[in-house]
Length: 221
Image (cartoon, rainbow, N blue to C red):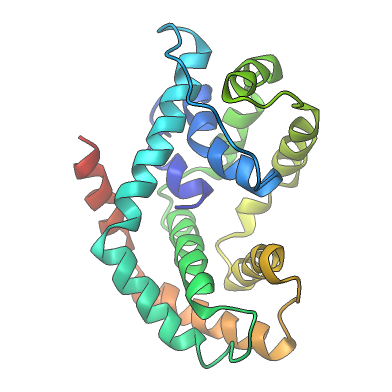
């Protein structure tokens, strides 16, 4: 799942570090995909570090359940069938794009259906103290934390997730993610046709898209 989909499971909790912990794995992956992490020791209850850890562990469990779900398998397969006619040459891989595309679509539909509040999401991230994040990252085995704080600040200030309710913005994000793997950007043909695929898929999945969130939720209990 993507940022806002993970936020869906923490948004009712008042501690912002729970939300931060739930999206940190994706932040780290986007900032430095080769980082390796140590297993974290238990931290004291009541400390903000403990909420970072709880959010981190929730992220791992949500992704494990989600990626083994029938909706994930069915909808990524359906999306891939449309994308194979758009991305016909290597190295761009329709399976990879369908996986990421479905997750981006879920974020978009959460926004459209007012299931998450992006303003509150960014406010929670902004309220987290960088020194607490530093302590957590050191426990993970990350010694040089300076670069990450710059990345996080840019992510928060850009507020780009607010644009995720538009298919064009999702395709732009999909292109940027894909270029970390194969460098080449989408052609005009690929961009325009992927916008059409994403738009039609969003309409097909709405409003039943929320079922996968409930499916995961039941297995978290």
